[in-house]
Length: 173
Image (cartoon, rainbow, N blue to C red):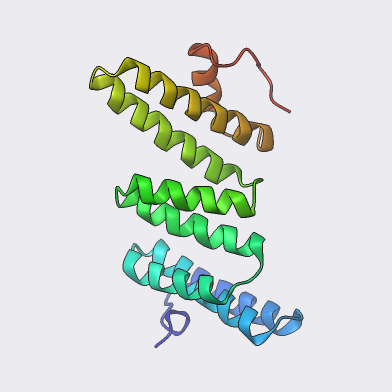
């Protein structure tokens, strides 16, 4: 049974009804509609913490989806799951793929920066200061890009950039 038929809360049911209506109104091919249905089911499963089911749905959506912008969001969500499962290298690759398709995805830029910063902290703890600084510099570059796209977000990153001396800019536009 598709996940959309199992949703038992009002918000999920409402979203499903609205999404189905939009799909009927918008001119979309059957393949595009199927891709969206898999993506929607993936988001629902992910929200419920059913990561294996979410990944299955996202990978099915990825097989069908041709639009680069939409593919970037599918890849981003797959990367989120791998990040939460501790598979940082796999997630980094997926975030980079998403950013190749959609360079204006601040949340992916932020997540790449978070991973690089975390890896930098690990290198610092291991006594590899040079490697740590390289990773911190990489994190800084990704955070700067994210902040330029979403200047009101990532306040902690903005503070870190300033306190670490990696940015002299107070306001990003």
